[in-house]
Image (tube, rainbow, N blue to C red; front, top):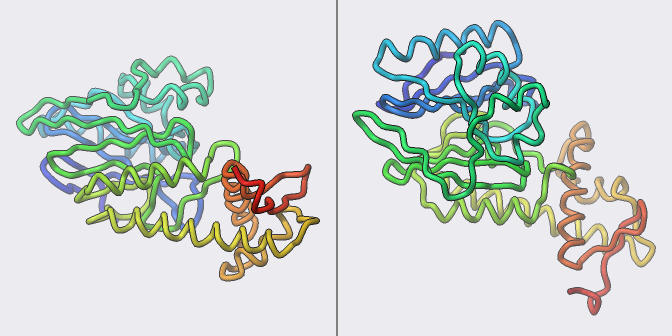
Length: 289
């Protein structure tokens, strides 16, 4: 693995080992900017990887690039595991969405000096000036943010999609209905390059956003069909996994159960499923809202 890796005159990729979900083993950090530099994802909690990250960040000024802040796409541990150490050692502020800040450990919230909202512009001055638009894209996590640079057609997508493994939408943090809406929003950008947190950069990412949407809707149809087959008595979510994920290896069913619950919550919000304690039932056709 080569790191850092220069992707363009204004963009470097630095993958660091993190406690993320397999098959991914690393979280990508990025340096955005030709002079003012935004460091994306203070991710790694491991001391050896933090030392490597610090060496990378401290070498940037030798090339005329000056880090101005750390940016976290969202609050999950494989994205903010190094936030405290990296912010202190580099003496940099952290930028994140308020929903992300509220989910950080109270002892590190003071590092966040800028709470980003949808529609803001992050202007990075330099020989090649860039203006990154803040896109609040909840669904995977309540405070998830993507960054879009229209001039280059580049979008930082965090955990909205990945080029290795898949993205888990889990009850609590996740909302399947909102996630699909935000994927459609990203597709509509017509971006030329997507920078995911896990895996290689993605050329022409609109097609991938569309495939994610289609795959989730296919899975939703299987979840609903399995629910309908249980009849008026319904069934617990655990009993639906085998039918809804019959194309998925059994060792992945515990994770599949989390996604299935997210699909059920979406179906309930749309009036197509009804929770009765631990049991889920398909809504009667005439009862749909």
